[in-house]
Length: 461
Image 1: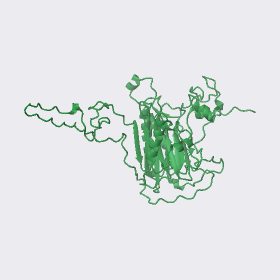
Image 2: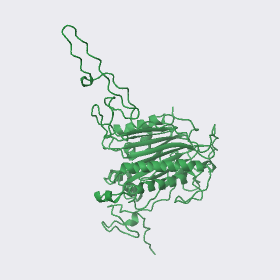
Image 3: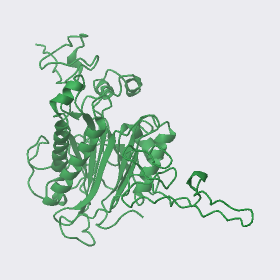
Image 4: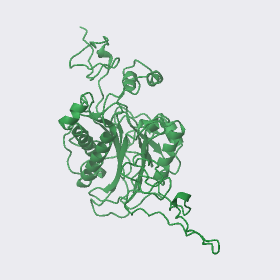
């Protein structure tokens, strides 16, 4: 006897984006057959680190024990206890112990770099308007003009104008000396924390930067180093997307840096961090009643999230939305790989076999996301995956503002400098520049994490 095809549980119709109810077999708006939409796969690695397709049987990928990826707590243990396998299922040689094991739980973050470009010293040359009028001279004894008085230097805590390099910037963001409007601090951000670095830029078309990131380093209970990067992309069609991405990145980063030193398995820690980020974004929707009355049609703040944790022998990724993680091996003769799958309309069409990848991403609906963080999200489905790379390389965590200009893993590897593992901040700057040179149509954010995580205290050259 024939049976009805298994229906996939999707919040919206893949064809017309109409919201669906549980149990619907056809879209009530366009009649789309929902039985052809495949169910989401369980969280697990989908790509081999060395570029080869992993075997479906006999591969014992490392996952958090006693954790199904849906919030069940994992026992306290170090990631080094997990048996390592490559993509073919062969055991990996044990990782050598770190050269110097620091005290557990100690962070080795470098001080964050300023959000704006460094300012030069004030120009000693003054305009005519800044000069002090000369005293009246007599015909018998002319008097030389008095030396012009320099403008009052702003206090150390005050911002200095990026245009005249001398005037104080007022609370409205304008120079009191020359009137020049100042760039907002989130227009361009850079930060380096130990071996991890991230750069975010407003791009060339958007009026503000709605991306945010969080990077840091810590130590596992056995003293092994761990690097963390979180990248968030605000949903432009939502209210306050810049606030959403900032809140999510901070909450997820703090959650990871707090959980890893306690011995939480990195994959479980990533899952919990995504939940913490979701709660932080949901809290933004709890505005005073007066704010809702003034803008009753605004939707809730929302953003996407992608992150990575790198240890001495384990790589964990987590995501919700369409930001991505790429793996670029140090040996460029070996293939790179993409480690995440987009929560997007295009990805659903490809997975359902309804379109080729080229056809799906050429469609105007390609970048419509099907998963995000926010109070109006249908259902939060964090994705996490663990990998055991069998060679050194660099992990690229980025928003679509970058991968739109380097979509395939091969294109991403080609755009990244060869020395990115030892100069991650420089590598991140180059990748952002690649997106800006390509048109900069969106905000651009990228974080680079060398694998394996170097010993504590080792930073970029």
